[in-house]
Every structure is written in C-alpha cells, then in structure tokens.
Length: 228
Image (tube, rainbow, N blue to C red):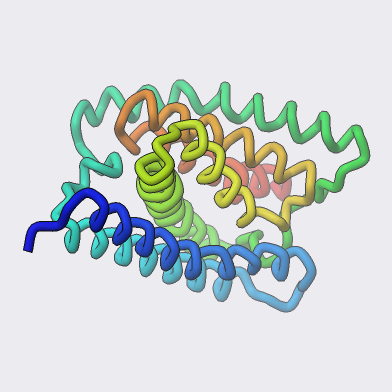
C-alpha cells in the first residue's frame, strides 16, 4: 500500500512520541548523578553508552522502516576531511561562548559545580581509556539523536526550522542537570551552535567533531591536567 502524506505525517508523529517517551525519562539520570556519590564511573559510562547505542539503533530502525536514507539525518561521508576540519576549527569558538555564558549566569547566582561529579570523573588508565571510548560513542550517538533525528523530525512535522533547533537543543540540555543551572545555560549554547552548524552543513560530521572535542577536554584532558 502506498502511504499518503497525511498517513506518513501521522506515523512520523507517532515515531517522535515514542522516541521522546524513551529519551526524556532517561535524561532525568543527570539529576541523580548530581545528587549521589555512590555511582561508579564504570557503571555510568557503560550505562550511558548502552542507552545511546540502543536509541541510535531505534532511530536507524525508523529510517529503515520508512525507506529513508541515513543521509536524511546527516549521516554522510561527503567531504569528510573538510567537515572534520571545520568542526575542529569551530570547537574553540563554541567552547569559549559556552564558557562565557556559564560564567555570566554563575556570577548572577545560578549554580555551577566547581568540578565534575565523581561518577563522571575517570581515574586510572583503564577508566581513562573507557572515558575516551565513551566520548566517541556519546559524540556520535547524541548528535545522531538530537541534531540528526529529533531536529529533523520536529522541523518536518512543525514546518519550522527554528522550533526544530530550539526543541532539540532544549532536550539535549536536559541531560546535563549535573552541571547546575549556569552550566546548563552553557550546554544550551553548545547545543545551539551544534544545531546551527548541522543545519548549515547538512552533515553531522562537524557537530560530532565539536562534541567529541568538548567532551574529551571536559572529561579527560582538563581533569587529568588538574590532577597532574
């Protein structure tokens, strides 16, 4: 049977509802990490990676079911080297912008932790190696989920690119409650810049590169240098 535009729209709306139903509760885990010191880094890292890979598998299933190409959500190797270079060059600008926004709201009295939670702080060679793997998985998965799929579906259903960018960025930000209110403001800026680069380039490669570098510095390099 050939699906009409209205039927396809309805099915995509149901898909989006199922996706959000699975994603939004899991993002509440960021608030748990903020408040507990009993979770180990290994447990959080493995749990996060498994969750993200499972959600990406769900999105790929949606694409397969609909007969949509992966390029529709920005998964393309087109101009790969150029996109990686663009992401690497854009990262310092995004990091500085997020840092300025975080400092501004922290100066206004909003909360921002002085250091990452223990559950997100790798220690020792084995945990640092796991952290690098986690950073790779998270960068690819979260850009696929929030920029590629969520932004695109909301834009398609609402016919509003602005709503797609803002809603996908807001959902992405919810997963960073452990960074405090000021920190979440900085994450919102990062997510917004990732989204704008994705909309501009129509490829996830540059945002993935930016996301990878941000998490690598925040989770692995800077804490390691501080302890050295």
